[in-house]
Image (cartoon, rainbow, N blue to C red; front, side, top):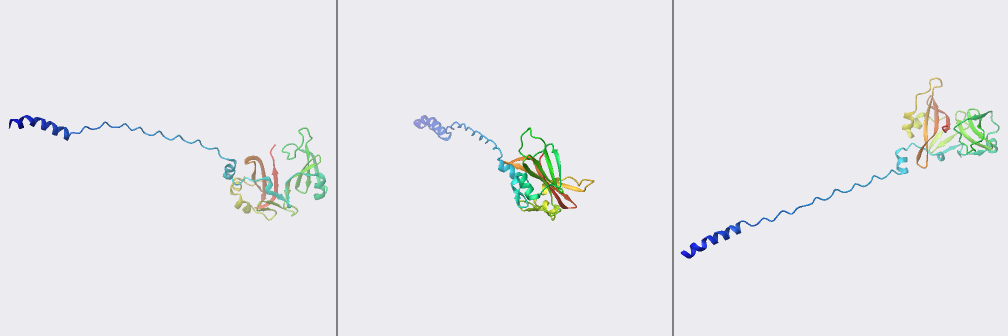
Length: 209
């Protein structure tokens, strides 16, 4: 009996140790570092061009089945004959011909309402009248002649058509400007389509001063 009394406190302390296990220290967890954002890539010229699908290239335009490009005065006269009239030195700015900086201002050669820029021995079509039937252009799949309507252009180039100004008060003409691009970049040059009463009248290769 005395032996039991002596060992009882020892048994009680042993039981307490077993019922209260030591809690391990919490392990510190380090949150992962946020990912480094990737730099935003610069848009490619192809992506820029596709963002504005109504840009056009000069190579898409043909007139009477020929590409729009420089020709010699001799070639022009073989194709068109002598002009109806000549406005000498009238090309003060916006020239499309590759001429020396010190060259005199070019001339406008008129065949009816169709205009060619002429400088020295070089010539280039500036605008053509489609109402006579002598000139017919193509812009990709779009025909440019006296039967072309504003609705025809709107189906292919809705943005440019929507941005066209109101018809001019005196002439009643409305001009749709289709911007040219070069190497994927927008330029200030444009193909101007002049309409009256919803029908195409004139096509102009416009280059600013």
